[in-house]
Length: 364
Image (cartoon, rainbow, N blue to C red; front, side, top):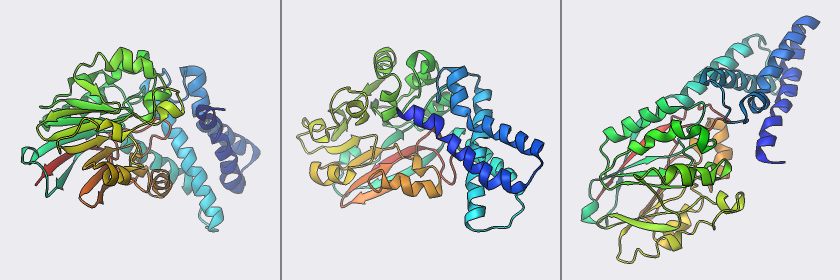
């Protein structure tokens, strides 16, 4: 049983939970209970219906409006199941009819945050030993764009326009650019070919590059995007005094049987002249070891989506080495974990956790 199958059928457990904690306690007449049951069943069947009618549980070939509406219905139903459980656990004697209003209201807010165009988040990083050639150097990080049949071309164009307007020296893409097969989604991601920076655009792979169509993306899209260079356990020197390395995501060899494991030591093998070391690694886990043992001065990562929501962020943090969002320090070195500038279609909501286009400025 693969992870797509798990995500397709797990919602039915929440359907049963919602029936037990919300529908049954309402003590409605049989017809009303049947209507609620059928409506909730439709909401929780999102992934199954996407697979049946759209060809894929997470990246269906359906009109964007249909995907957004069903995302909203599904998300609201999931929140309703959580609210119903809380009323039972804490013995809250609230009027249960209020719960659907709260659930689908929160879902609308979370979806808006998930799909809206990200704002620019500026971060200044000060290093006492920064090479003079890099003082004031501006790096834009874009992570977890998750371009898909829901997050379409217009959104990618808006992200590219905002990024180019910053006139960065360097643009770094830290994985999970798209969800789905290149033959279907490439037109929505295509605007990233227009990204422009003085010293170029560099990238590393994320786990979603391997889940769907690795060879399709790498061969038929990324290779043709001549302005983007993917770094896989290798190093580039885009500016005087700067060594920029990238490693592939571990999903390549763990799940897809492609290539080898990420090896940051190997990636910096050619950086032998005391350059300022920047590492692109999709997952933040292992950042302290990279900084202390390999001499990475700045690691740029994503993957966590900022924790998605306050309660979920604790679980996300546990599975990512204790890192979830923002800036972390290891002596004189830094890790920056982007909240991402998109959202995965499997859980399209964000709460108290805005997406971001990150502008990092290096200072002495």
